[in-house]
Image 1 (cartoon, rainbow, N blue to C red):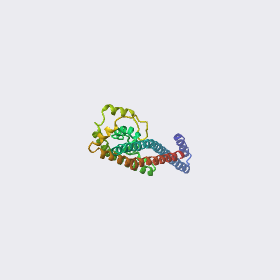
Image 2 (image 1 turned 60 degrees about the horizontal axis):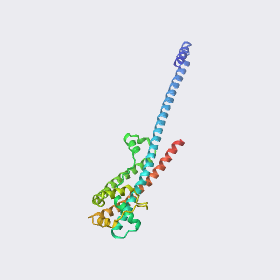
Image 3 (image 1 turned 90 degrees about the vertical axis):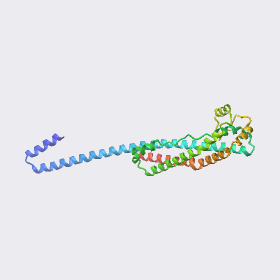
Image 4 (image 1 turned 180 degrees about the horizontal axis):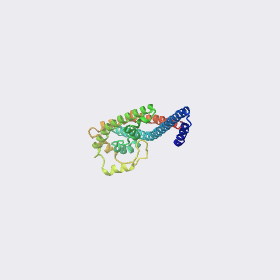
Length: 262
């Protein structure tokens, strides 16, 4: 193409057609400018496409993380239910006669009360977006605000769980000698969910263990604290977090659908 333009210029000069040459030169400049503008536009389009693809990639990762967070919130709500149920039946044994089902359940409840939650909310995509500066790729700032608020709540929840765990661990220290290791291991092997199971293996002699438990200094207050903490944890911490995960998942789904349509 440059050779053709060069030959045309030579021909016009030889023919002494200065006016035609000038018009041609101007036209050539215009064509070059147009070519540059087209190249810039194509480059800009490619860059925008790359940004859009990166945004979709992170939106999908965020959606995956929040689907996992919903499962974790479900597990944490369930954990609170289990531990509140455990605390309720043990506290009842201090003052009232247990039903046959509660009596069978008592051993499992006492043994599980020291358990602490180990389900951590997932933040891989969010942390990467912030650490790399790619957070600016997400065009929907309302979604970013909701996700940011969610992880602020998660940080508060984890701080609370750390504080509440001290009650569970202190309870374990106080009750560690209540049952011999054989009985404790047998209870652990049953691996029973005390919030929903009714098929308990019956262990004899709970009256003796109840009496010994009541004599442990400060243990009733610890169990009461665990019961209150787990009720608060369910209603004020993990259930609201579950609801937030569901809301954010819907927002992310809508945002991804918008990208597909565009």
